[in-house]
Length: 410
Image (cartoon, rainbow, N blue to C red; front, side, top):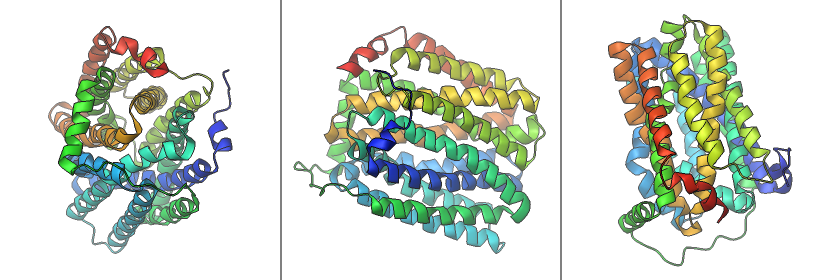
């Protein structure tokens, strides 16, 4: 039976309710920092390449360490890992605030803090993703993933808007300070979560063997391999358009920090609508058709965006880009987590974060920054959109993407 209430999973599960409220509050602060960090990089260097490099510095540690981190996540207590990682992220935010407030911030320090954030995230992201099944169970996992995405996009709406207001009134340092405070909320919520006693993994493997085992599993499972290829193409070519938004806002649309914040908010509103739509489908799971539509719609909207010079049109297009992007991400994640066995979940989520966060913002943002510097930010977005659309068009005509629905219901 189809239910239209997207918050059913919050009503059913106390642990997830605490987790979701804390994470969403903290993510508001994280988006404030992300928006302020991008704008600060642009102010310090006046260089689109350096803006992309700061984003890439956040993700390079994820590329380097996430697969190893996945082995740790499958071996140790996930809730404890998330608690420790969130505490360290709070310390990083506090130091960033202090250096900016005292006027000692530089592009070098910004790159160091971005790298520290990514190093912690390499462990925290797969641990947090893998923790969801312990909070809600396998049956409610798709809705929990979608609702987690809705919290992410709610934060994407509120965070940049608050950051723009705070930057205008109090300066960039204050935006970093509010992010540091937000970690208090998430830590309180995490320590209120109560799970059954954790049981150590019966079969321990060496880290390198664990990584090899996960790679063999991905290669040997056609559905997983097809999904990961799709996610990889879209992460490298699609997600980096967000890293170019400070440049696109100022050079293409003639906007200031407030206008840039509104652009991000429009993406967030669209993402929130898309995520809540998926979460509301508690009685049936979105599958191949939904994923197919989203994978074609996302690059089509980005291609239109690349030709825009009017802010009003850009706001509308970014709203629809947010819808398509989050549906693509949430459905791919849900199908992947439904397929993989529990013993492999941490490593698969590490591989997922390796691609979605790591490769997208190292290779993707780095390449997009180079293209934007050489031929313009609009061409950087357009080229990625054309390649994504072409790949999606042909990928869904081949096996095993045609059989994703059957794999999900198996």
